[in-house]
Amino acid sequence: MSPTGASPSGSGLVLHARGLTASGSRGVIFGPVDLDLSPRQLTVIHGPKGTGKSALLLALTGRFRRTRGTLIIDGIDAIADPYRAIRRTSVATIGDYVQPEDRLTLAESVAERSYLDSVPLAHAEDRMRRIEELVGYTIERSTELEQLTAMERAIASVALAMIRPSKLIVIDDADVMVPHAEQKELFEIFLRMTELDDSAIVATTVDDDMAPPGSIDIALPARHRAKVHPISGEQVAASPATPDDADDSADGDPSHAPSSTQATEVTDS
Image: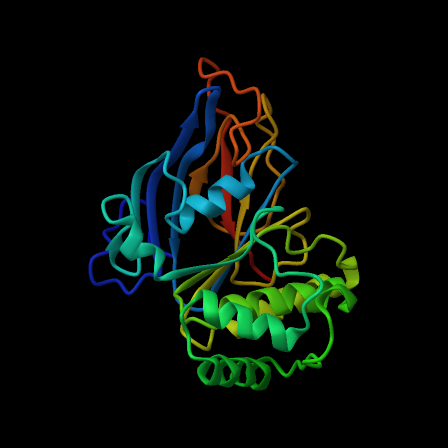
């Protein structure tokens, strides 16, 4: 990752954020966030419920209109030109708002996503086959999504989001219900999926201890709390403050001084 203050010009970064902040009528939702993401990189955002994880995911994809600061996605200024930047990103899941439909089979889900993303069905099916070859993981097309394991559901959600080529893919609550022993494999599969388009994946999680080496960890603290979960690695950025949900439903206090947290690069140590 580039050091704080580095210019994204000609750097080939998937995402460059400086001082990324969002506030609502009840106070600060998240920020300031400084973050650089390179191609084929995984970022894990974790923290208690209500710390603004979903809002931060929306902001990183150019979809949160209250965002202020610098946000460059694949060379595009997402603050000045959000609609163009959004085309470089894709959302797998966001809370209860964006989710694959449980009652659809995987084949039907591919068809639905290809329609929504204006991708020819034949191209969408080819993309799914390429993803399966890349990660060595196949899900029977006739299986309804509600019948999948939590791990299979997470993988399928990201794969569906990659039907339209994107440089940044986000998934909310990636590890919910996934057995702890399987989370390391899940994150490793996410990393392999980034190879298809030299993209980056950002996932929000409950835990972060299974994130693979080389991934980026961002810990969002609970309100009025500055404690940071320690992750071995180099500190590369600083981020969020007083939290709020994506729908601005938390009882933020705009006069309260922001709590600080850290983004770290996960290492083998």
